[in-house]
Image (cartoon, rainbow, N blue to C red; front, side, top):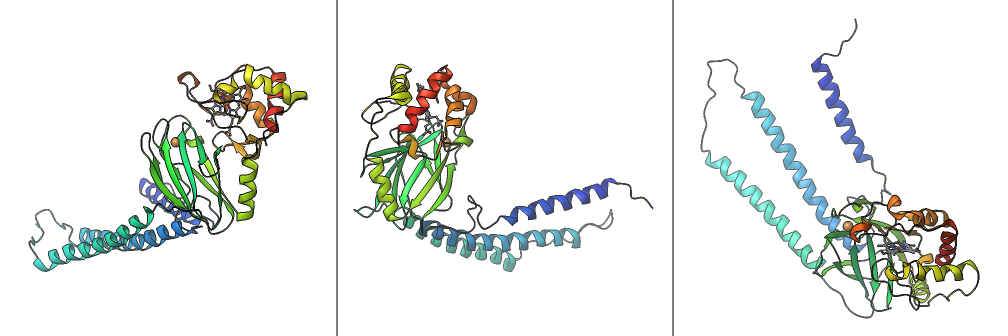
Length: 346
Ligand SMILES: [Cu+2]
């Protein structure tokens, strides 16, 4: 006998494949870096997990219960012949009371726990032990300023592990959303407003993050990384970031430094003590960062060459509207020299 795919069989097969696919999405490994539902890496994320999990379980239980009853009723009380009208029942006080009181009590419980967490999340810790960071969203990269240390950097957020980090955030253009899922929830980054968030990492580590509010062409290329250091490593990082690299005076790097001014890089990019740009990421310690352009490209000479040849070809941007970095039509020789200069910005 040959099995021919009847529509019914095809539908059943489709349903089975769909169910398997859904099941497969549950197979996330422990290390999935942007999985919010497991393995929080700090006290704030843990609080959120302790709220999400019970609420999800309650919701899942009632979802199955209600859907089960709907299916049961549809089958059990279905019309069996054309002239038969189903028995009409109306106004069972007992039932109506039950399905009003049970959800009301449940929602009250969920509400109380949620409210307690809202107050917890709204704290704005201060003091010498708390690292303050200003986060500024740009289309399409992140600027991080540390007012206590007078550091400005981009896309890589260094924090000391085990310490509270109080973040203030705003945007220069459109609404973004700051989201380091292993450490905290999402907070919108809104032009003309200041929002708050606290993050803390249990231990040193490297935590993924990205913009979570659609913000235009390169929204998907607006990632970030939170790098939690030991206190000693963090202190070293602060010391490095607050000591400007020496201006190169010989060779390609010196020629690159001159090009940095004559080609107009200096109008957009700040290098402390050398240029005061107003638009792009601060490059004073560019070579200390592992990745660039919204944390999407490895910081090495090969990627930098591609970037300087034609930035909008590497990352969708709107330089004509003043968004992103334009193609400056540099020669290969100019690029070589500019890279030598960028490499010197340790
Ligand atoms: Cu964004």
